[in-house]
Length: 287
Image 1: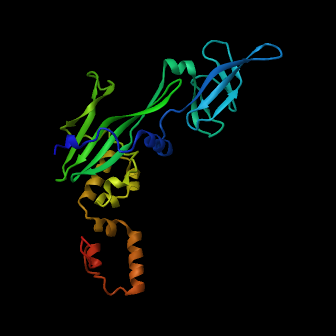
Image 2: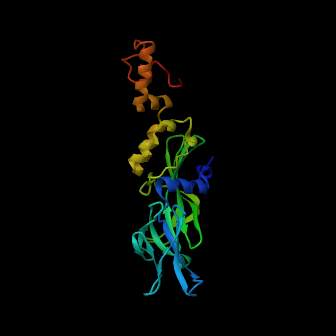
Image 3: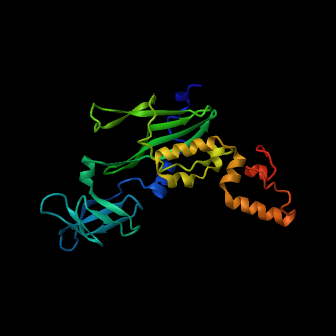
């Protein structure tokens, strides 16, 4: 089957789960403390009293505090860090998250948009797909949403060859032109990993369960933090059998196996002259 047809249109992790995962692992981008001006009429004096109602997009807690009107621009509100203006950086008094103060009228005109690029690993039809999605987080005056777009995909086919697909194109000739998502996958003939970023990999382990990648240690991929090394690392593991992954790359497990074997049968059964760990243990790769 054509590789293009195997590429998914959306990540296996749904938008709600992706939002929760981004909050926990990579952040969703700019988070805000929305605030707006409200008022009530004092029943005794008849005076109109104004105050600020604030809402944190991280923990969704709300608070009411003093508001300061006048002097041009948007109103200001009082937080525990002091008087805060629209666009200022401050902290939520409930969860402690760093947030940007954003007045409701400003968000109505200009929503705040942030983009994160989580990765997903999928194994299908003998190929391994490293898919980079664009999780676009937008905060408006009355909504907080995440949409997911196709971005890049690096495919290692069953013959060990790499393919790069993208769903972006530049709107113009300049290298500084904005990248737009076109919604369809097309293959780039020249393989390039300059925009690879394995900083975020979705932890969907079932996608490669029972394969050599199951023992590839995703934490090592995260630690590399370089696209080229990330892809080379995956290529090496695709050429290893599962038992070799365990014996060659899990020293703690090997030590535990040897300790257990010594307590039961001794170590005379180990072939110390063998070159490969599974041969030392006198087991075949299928075993």
